[in-house]
Length: 299
Image 1: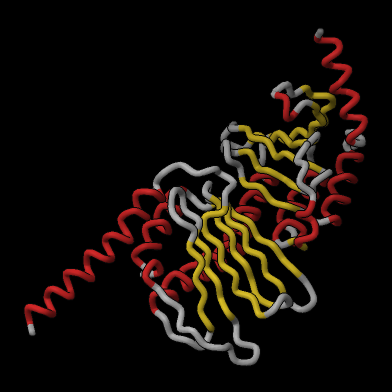
Image 2 (image 1 turned 60 degrees about the vertical axis):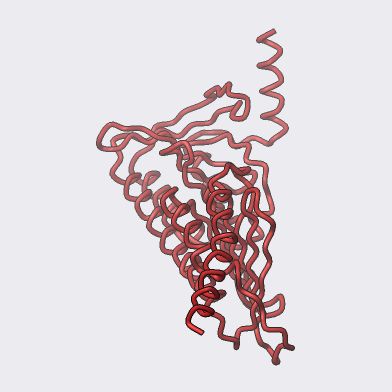
């Protein structure tokens, strides 16, 4: 009997190795940066709950839906946190989880986790909320913790950015053209100070960026024409790039700078700020004409 049990344990061990080892090696393979590798759907019908999407480049989007509104929070996970999650996925037991087949109870949530890792077959697993399943719940709880962290991380980043603006050695507002053609041309500049700096810091720190209606994310152009060149107390400079067309602001402190959508209210405040600084807020057609004229002159 003991020999039989040992053989069974060994067989089960090698079964797990055969399932888990390919995931670890393949998860390390490169994937398109914008591809979604982990998705959580934790919804009660279509009116309440949340979804989570994690991209291969660490971009994390959490959408929270209630009866009267919809909110989106986005952050960028560090490479360390991303690797930690990828290592946790096979260890959680999700690869050998099997759902207990039954009908759901009234208003019972049927949570779904989708894994689309590089060179790995797509895995879709579901569980009814009232069932106990450690092999599912370990990863589910880890994703819930990740979702909660997005709000705290956004608030931390934006609060820090607002403080940098208020204490900066110099801030210059800019209007430019040619962002996507690597031929950036500065059109107009205006030095900022006093109330204008406070206004910019308040916009950055305010609820318009900290949490925004999801409808603002339907625009996807990101063809910016305004920025703020910030020189901090240490003499280091970076840009805050603003796209008034698609309602997005990017803090370019690193190559993969933090990016945040903003509301229509924030757009109005930013437009008013640029106008006070005598920086035009032209239409997309006007900027296209400027780009065309520049290309003609370069011939």
